[in-house]
Image 1 (spheres, rainbow, N blue to C red):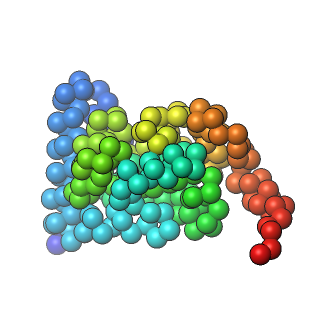
Image 2: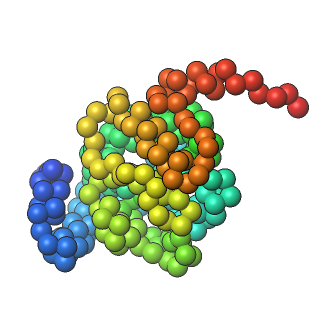
Length: 211
């Protein structure tokens, strides 16, 4: 039996980045189509896998997420990834899943979701209009996975994005630094400690009121 192997991610990234914007968009569309064909040949269900990250939720409605952001003043963290992206899976397994599993981030200091660019289901965008995740990613220039964006309730970037992955051990701290920039740009007075360990200590020192 022949085992198919997708094109190395670094090669894909280099190929796209060195092309013109119009050609880049065409190449991106071509890559998504290729991965869908690849999934059919290998028996992989893209939609199911992209949404099966356990505690790290897949984005299903950007309009609702925006409303929550406007009400709470929390920034929106979106990680753009794909099932064929090995670095995305590494980042999810080692950083985002542990963060989400603890229950101390999502809805408390940030609203974080995964955006599967290889999913075909349309979702409500910030304005309520149905959008395709892959096309939206290209519009945002977030088609190179993994890419992490920090947005406010209007869809505006409020902190520098994170493109690619260097050191997963330091990645959570990098997220904290970006969140503090986002808080400042959103006029949110809160500042999260610079590392997850310090944040955990802060949580332990917080006295919860008894009802």
